[in-house]
Length: 119
Image (cartoon, rainbow, N blue to C red; front, side):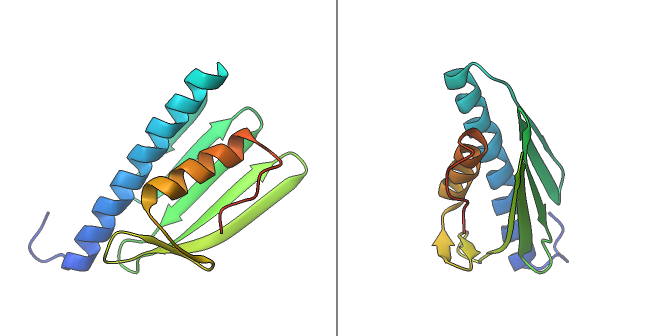
C-alpha cells in the first residue's frame, strides 16, 4: 500500500478485505451444508451475497470506516450501519462484533428467513 495513505485507512481496507473473504468462506460452507448455491461478489467498497430469493448487500468507505448493510428477503427488508474500528472490530449500534461473527450472522440470516438480523 502507498506510504501516503493513512494507516487507519490501510487497516480498515485490510479488515474489509478479510470480512469479504469470510463472507465467501461462510457462504460456501453454508452452501455445502444446505446443498444450495450462494453467489458472492465483492469490490473494494461493495459486497453482495445472494441465496435463493434473499440478498445481502454491503457498502463500505475506507476513508471514514463507515459501512451499511441491507438484507432483502421476500416480504421483508432490513438494513443498518456499522463502522470498522482501528482494532478491527465492527461497531454496530448494538455493540461491537469481530468480523467473523458478523459474517456468520449475515449468512445465517440469509439462510433462515425468521432469524433476527444483525444489529
